[in-house]
Image (cartoon, rainbow, N blue to C red; front, side):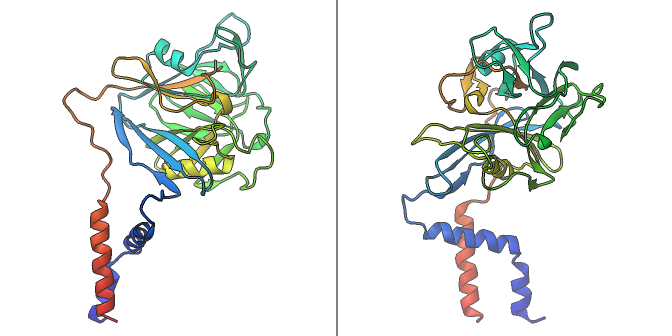
Length: 331
């Protein structure tokens, strides 16, 4: 092998791809936003990171995305969902996601199962669609989810040790080891592959605000995302296929669509213990039948959270220029 070939082999395919990506970015005129933007993760609680994503009007349309990444290996992380309303009608009482965060004491929360009826003020009783388990108690059995693409319905199952999976459930399954569960439809990612059609087959699969949950391939991270919609000039919603793409961008290998539309809400606890909306719900917050939250410890005072490291752009630029010079000299 000659010297030129040996040096060339030192440059990995991945690194070359990154360098050429920088070249493309440099070629974009100033003031022109990249079509798809995914920000780096930033710690907001111990074991919980937050990131945002966006797309401009050209690819595919205006979208604002919020994402939470929960470290399932962190021993301080715990989960909670809307409990049973006991002897009252139906299964739960409706509650906004912000009110759920306050009443339960969780640090972050999103909406979860589809439900009916919709959407009077609290405390209207709600019937949940699909399996729901709160603190080991079955709140709603794994009945059929009466939605399009029901064959792809699924449940997020979380054990008390935080081991998690996204699977299809049935009335014959044993849930004795499940501590928390939420369900909806359809499953968007199955072993890294998108399961839904690119072209929406109906209004349900078309443009809507979205909430979804994913699991990383190593099952260390649970990813929660919201995509705002029905807000022209700000965020116009996503198809089911696009929601699956966003789950992938944030590191998901398995994925499940949750209730969306006016239900889509993501909230965190601020430094004073008050609820802070991370997304922009379409209209006012809805009284959802089921909400899903995460307990976590605050980041200690005096410790500055460090965002997930990313190679600086300047390094990529310098490396790219050096590589191009080397290529020209060794032609």
